[in-house]
Image (cartoon, rainbow, N blue to C red; front, top):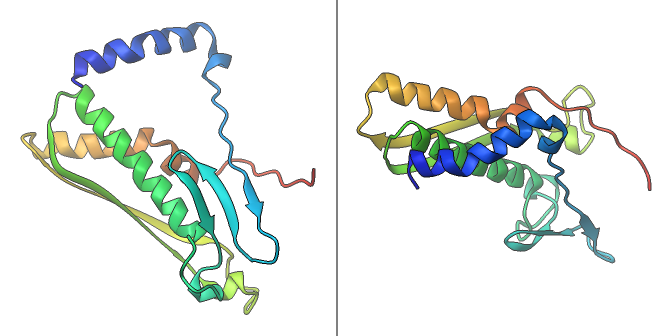
Length: 167
């Protein structure tokens, strides 16, 4: 896809969202189904069902996906798609492009070992690795725009309100 095709694809969407802002609100949803006696859960997604469970640092055996790793996967995927979209819109060809998302969490918080330790990821680093024919300033602008428009990265930078309820 080139810049012209991308603009043609997105123009009617942008026009619609300008005319009807409510149409731009996109719902997202995932359901984790708990398994009988296991600590793990099953989450259906686009690529099939993922079995998620305890990370080895929290008592798991490493055979099930870790939710923190799944979050990193979402960050890397979103940032990668966004970088490709930005590059396409700017007419820049990327070669050998990859995006790595890395995060850290402290198992002491999750396991209740030390209540002063936060539960959850405390930092995320996104690394864009690519080559192109663009100059350094253009490449820096692409990374800046990819960060700005990456839904998952922005969600982490400006956390949404989280409501927890019982059905």
